[in-house]
Image 1: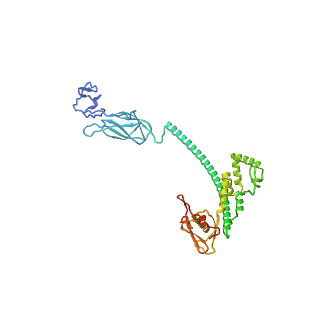
Image 2 (image 1 turned 60 degrees about the horizontal axis):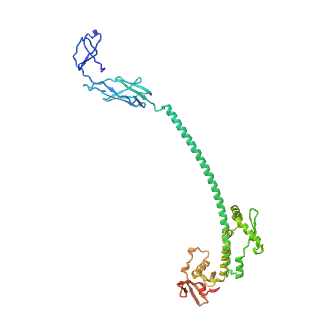
Image 3 (image 1 turned 30 degrees about the vertical axis):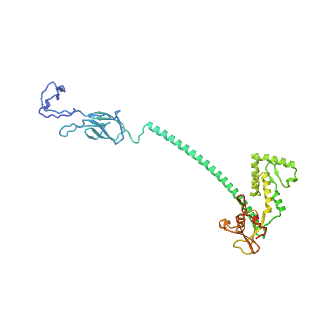
Length: 413
């Protein structure tokens, strides 16, 4: 339909109104009432082309420059001679370049934006909406702006929280560093004091050991030194309490002493007093490690009495021996203090400690690798052992040999 038919002939200018009548299947068209010229040329009719709507709603959205595809049917009639129909496609008011196939028209999109009506000379497929890449709708702009604002606020809040956390962490780190420095200084000072005290004790012991004999007190002086304890200077405590033990307790009033001890016991149950008491003691430079151990001791009176009782009983077991080292010569005797209740192995350990003092333990000989020889005069020599033929057995129990078992006396070689 709508195909232009060209008719050639003569005297055609006399025709007032040219019409064509078609008859097909007994049906006539064009309302031709009078027929002046009859032409029996047959025509072949084909179905009209049809086009589909652009999308389900009739509106198709594309980007600028994207090809537009118009789908349809019977776009190319199957006539002989490769005849084609002439299509014209207008997008808005602008025509587009077409590529025709049997089922679709491919149209190059013009440089337009917005909604444009698509008109095909064979019909109206629908409306084409061409949107720009850089153009955003108002709702999209509002949504993006709101989202960006929320994101910016969240970022600022996170940065503020992070800054506060960092500042708090820095403060905590500085506080901990200051505490560590103070603790390190206190520990270094205490270690220095303890080392100085230890060096003094070692020097005194070394001076005593360098003599001909070990200082060996007689029983009365030994006992008095164990019992007698006194503080040369009073200890001042905050809160007005003055603890002074310049005089023996026996010279003070028993009632006052009992009352003072009872009150002091109650004060020790007070947390504030106990902390103040400890801090005051530790603040004194003359408060040595030994004094700290004495103050912190948990011994009861009965335990202290038992300790002193053992100390008194062990006095009569003390022996002073003269030891000759394995590689020593005559005149190189070393005095060693032992107990006659010590086993032979214990005596060898004490002898090795005295002979190899100042030498690392890993470089010393072991007690099991050495023999202990008791010399009496120039001829009598006895190898002392924990077990030998003289070991006593009592009710299936074996008693290890001691110096008392061998009847070793003082100043023996």
